[in-house]
Image 1 (cartoon, helix red, strand yellow):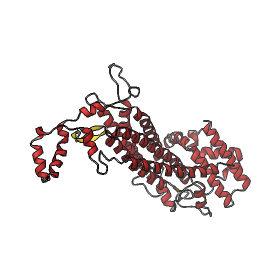
Image 2: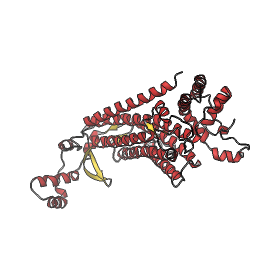
Image 3: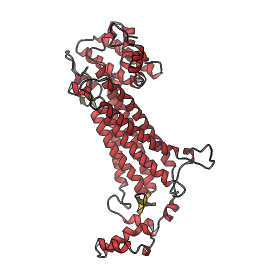
Image 4: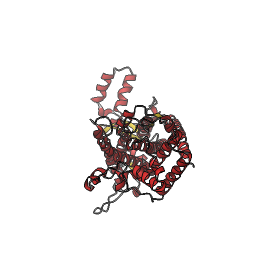
Length: 449
């Protein structure tokens, strides 16, 4: 198969193996994006007179055939192709001859891969945001079911003050919502069309970059042609960072569940069908799913550092280093989406042991409440603090359910604002589906003959 950069010489096979690496395998994930980008670019070439109507039609039909073959697992990118762009162009050239050779006009593989990754990321970000909202809805249901089930709150891992299962679970929702806002910011930054920047310096043809951006459903053109190429890796790192924050929250969530489900706590019972066993110890039921969630959070964090380290201190313009930012992005999407999905499936099966939680309350948990009762009676806070601190044995146990319900300021155990959270989730879901639907209509239109 011909390489798009073919010279009079052949590349050394050992060098080819080293430089291509597994890039051609990663590019199998980008076939759809490359086809869509090729159709939009070809449509623009027809608009400026490089292609005729008939040539565009033939190119488009064959590109759609490649997509169909890909969906059937019959379009393969070989190592000799190096990348998806070469495989697609070679297919077109074999089918269409000189017409296929025209498709790369005014383009470089530099802006072509930028475009592919942007389009790929748009669709994956839709999925991730949808998965975040799905897990939030599962946790909201869990929070409502357990809103007033008391649970000891902890600081420094030690027993601290009265809390609730509802407070704990809904804290994860609000944290994931902040992650959603990060994802939306990453989506907006990614939502710029780089096509037309070519090899970082534009071309001497009157291409219509705005037209291509509109065809592809981008919010805008990424204006500066040099920055378009310099942003490769940067935008990927922003997206991975947003996912690392999701995974960080899921790690904390998993860690809590591991701790609170051990026999010494027994606040929660994990579903046995989600727990693996030991090959030696017949009694073991291991929270492997939760342990791997912790580990995968560190993997995604390491992928963020890998990409940000690769792009640090590179010279302006294209550098081959950028090739190694693609794999970490794809892997981060896969890990984050899978983890969000499995936890959404897992959480409804977690049992809350209400009586054990109530029985776990002891008088010292009410020490701060007693301090503030004395404050209400007119004692200065510091005097009240000292008085309670030297007389802890005088503290009495209380009704923990009544206690958590009595704390009614915004966000406290008696006023979690779950209805407000439900409205936010509904509004965010509506906005997401609207943006996704608008984008998918653009893509469907491109794929019509």
